[in-house]
Length: 122
Length: 280
Image 1 (cartoon, chains in turn purple, blue):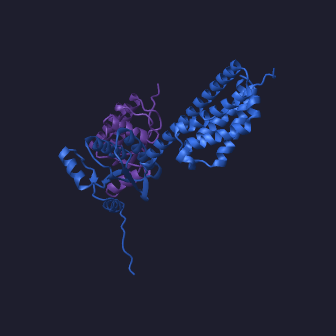
Image 2: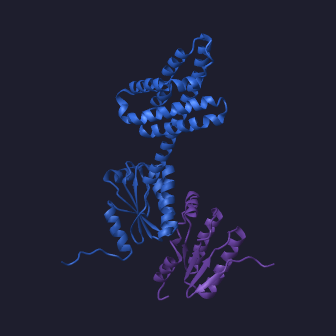
Image 3: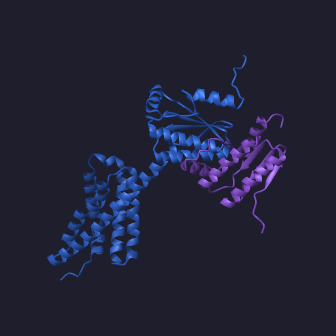
């Protein structure tokens, strides 16, 4: 049985994850596994999480974003979440999840700027 | 015995006299407020109404016969509501027709029973029309109020772009939950549209800041941050600074500035921009 996966693209020392499908719990857990494995194997220094297609969030997905950022940090990779939709942002704030440990950017371009500007000679 | 005369015939026959009497009564009733509508307009409206009324009565009880009259009346009431007439002044247009109409009836009838019947029929018709005019007057007023409310909501939450990448949100008036929601949605949408990285919330126009307002502000800041935009709160008056500290409101890591100009300077320096004076 093939498991549905979210692709992880490598761009230099940055891993690009673009969530294009409806996020469900199993998919989120799979992504955590895949991403930590990729960071460890590639020695990536930055993770760009594009959630511009994500329309629905719940507390689990919110926590997942937090977890991914935390795990990446332990593996010495900075996470930037980009392209959050207004409705998603409002929902997360109303849920009391303002994700204090996560860096954010308006779009992918700004996110890469943020990551490369931060990384030493990336 | 004279041939039976019907109501529409009486109206048509006495149109001149009824119209003159009616106009005089309307102008008397208007008193000091006659300037709201021109005499000629009033005259043409009254004449049109009278001929439509006679036409509708000829048609009997069929609703199709009354349609043009109803339409005319609705339009007239709407126009008067917009012109600033009160509801009773608008209703007077119909009710002041009673007296001249009854006089015309009295002149045309010899049989008291027939006269009473016709007066009753006329009263019924005019009362119904009077109610209708009041109703459409009120509907128009409600529409006006709704529109103004919406306009006020929109006017009070403009998001302006100060520079490429810098948005400003001058907040005016008290921040309640409903307005915070609108403000937040507007701001976040503009952040997406313009790809701005910095938003300045200016609270110069917010009269008081209590814990609830502060919480609303912090929510907006948190949501904007999630989208990747940093917020700067500006326009904090000395009294408000004192209130915030006395209430123990924790603004956390949010940058705050006294004036919008200061906040703009901070925003420019974060984007590595600067304003300099040109050498003459």
